[in-house]
Length: 269
View 1 (tube, rainbow, N blue to C red):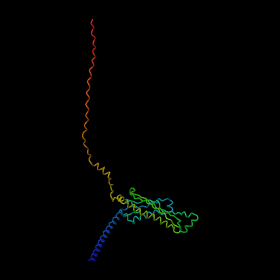
View 2: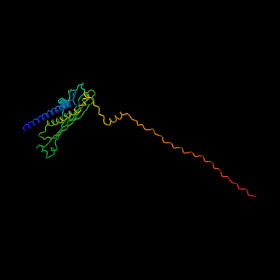
View 3: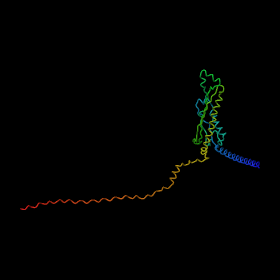
View 4: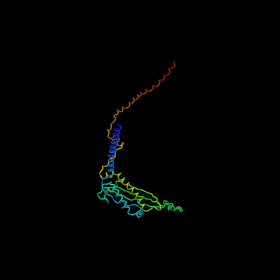
């Protein structure tokens, strides 16, 4: 009897875990579907070469940057499948066009201070860092309306990297690889910025209606006050204060009668 009870318990636990796994799988599929929708902008856009706006010394030192950088951005957008189709170069019928500028894209190297100190400048031969490389990339990108050239949104992405090398492992290829890693970070950020503005792009393309901003609590209270009819409170008419009766005018006093003088009686003769 005890063995049968244990067997039934094992079957019940197995059925419960199977149901839980099935539920989790279905939920995961739904989440992946939602993520795919949010990572897709179902429109056709145009793409033009970025303008090379680097300092002249950088342009002369490193050539063909405009074509290579623009090509890598275009490749990333196509590989990620963000848009349905991308025309390169942009066509006149494209409603939205991606363009931009290359502001910085270069690396420079400097010898470390230890290389200039007498007596210590031999230490690099023992493997101490002797070269410092600074790599930097900065890209400005914008999406604009093709017909009016109105900018929908634009952004700048930049990334810097500093690496030290010794005399044995420093090569130009390594410095180029550092610059490429900076550009990889920028490519990821470009994708994120475009997807963050997905709704704005769809609104311009006419696939999503512009959302009206929700009224604030203060606006709602003001609108409610305007809609309510104005109630005038009826107050009793003011009763005029009683006018005090005029004091009676005193009658003019009678003129005083002068006292009569009594003539003395005549003395007897």
